[in-house]
Amino acid sequence: MSPVAHTADAVLEVARSPLGLIAITLGGYQLGRWLQARTGGHALAQPVVVAIAVVGTAITLLDVDYPAYLDAAALISFWLGPATVALAIPLHRQADQLKGFVVPLLVAVLVGAVVSITSAVLIARALGADEVLQRTLAPKAATTPVAIALADNLGGIPPLAAAFAILIGIVAALTAPAVLTLLRVRDRRARGLAVGAVSHGIGASRMLREDETEGAFAGLGMGLSALATSLVLPLVALLLW
Amino acid sequence: MIRGLTYLIGFQVVGELVVRIADVPVPGAVVGMLLCFAWLRRTRAGDDTALVRAGSGLLRHLQLLFVPAGVGIVAYLSTLRADALPISVALVGSWLLGLVAVAWTAIGLERLTGAPHDDLPAPDTGTAR
Image (tube, rainbow over all chains, first blue to last red; front, side, top):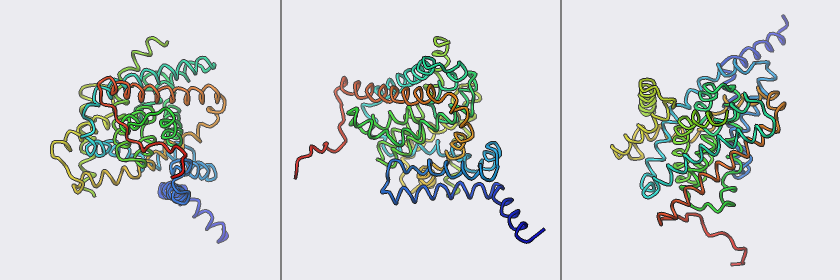
């Protein structure tokens, strides 16, 4: 074997190993952070979007299939669980702001869960999506791990449910603060809560960058929405199908 | 760092146990979050505790943790393309309706109870200052 071919093989082998794939993921994320800083925090320059694009391109070029990448990157996605627990921290710092907001908050999250499940299913049905797709779309407002579990219980396609949850998080990260201002929602607690309740962690991480209170209530909204969606979905499903 | 992460994982473990034993369809991490919140309130934890420092570090880079799941979008591109219209309208439409429902219910109830908040800076009216 020629030295050039040998080197090329070695590079490919390392790039396709968990070490290489994690390095690509971290590199894509750092590139996204650099772009975000360079554009002065432009809404379109979300590190998660840049990183997904970089990794998606890289695994296509390296001919690594998605399940294999997911296995290799398990070291990264593992920390989603502890990070979800850590959402208690911004909440703890903002706990004084909960006064007088507990009832509005609980009712709003429950209403939000019912509205987002029913509207997703009915819109998809009206536009001709089949039942499996409708069942995959139903839990998309819940945080990714919950959406996966719920879609599975409901007879949807779990990995696609994860993709939907991520997509909606990206839409939220790009547009939520502007949309809320257009809707004249000026209470930071309500702003954060709304984004967290319908666009989970990615939306929450955008709000956390905007403002500490918005981030804290987004985290709370995300947690409560996961609870509310889990409880409401089986009941709403009885009415929808 | 490791001490704080140990706490976080500990709360998640207890959350998982609660969820399994009580057999409720809620992720263990969400229950762990509620337990962690109760703990932070009880101990009146300050910003310099190990748990708060490790957790804040993780949260600063929350977006990174979604990348592996997000790459699934690329993997399912062909399915997404086949039903692009119903999927995109249902996703964005129901997201918007849900956002409006949560935000307006919350501020509506706040007004009813007589405690509305207005935290944003006054809108720029366009007049020269």
